[in-house]
Length: 200
Image (cartoon, rainbow, N blue to C red; front, side):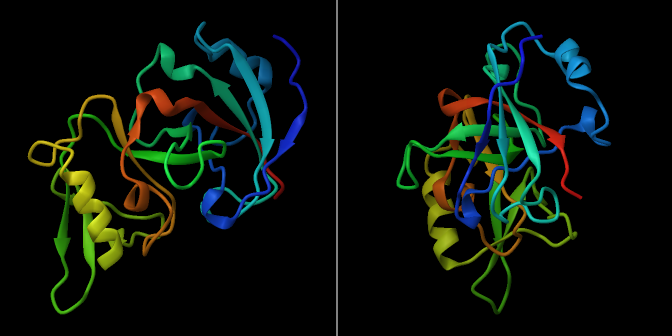
């Protein structure tokens, strides 16, 4: 396996946190050689980065290190709960890396349900509320609802189109994720993120 090159530090605002959880590395005890053995042939490069920020607080903390597996999704499908690395080409800035959790996949039905006597709605996938790590439903406020409405207009009956993903951070009340910038197209994906080490 080629050596890991450099440690890149992302000095990002809290909503730009690079966050990751890789189920096969849940105890973060697996060695890099074991990781390499599991990788598909289409991974062309591995890149270490240190996390800064808090948009994935409770799942990944500032100071932890991830490995970005570039081109991972060139030969494997995105699966629910994967942590995907992408560049957002909209107002957030196309030169910044973001990692979020893939919650809605192509073919899933996206929607929201208004909470009576409040300006809030709950986010739903396939008719069920999406819950955060704390077990609370993900909310969208009036601003988020308008963005979600724009995203829904890109669908047919709320079905997420082919090659599009709905991604979330860990903040249940609001967050700079698909509730603000909509679907992530497959062509914007850089790869998958893997938790390498913990500062805890």
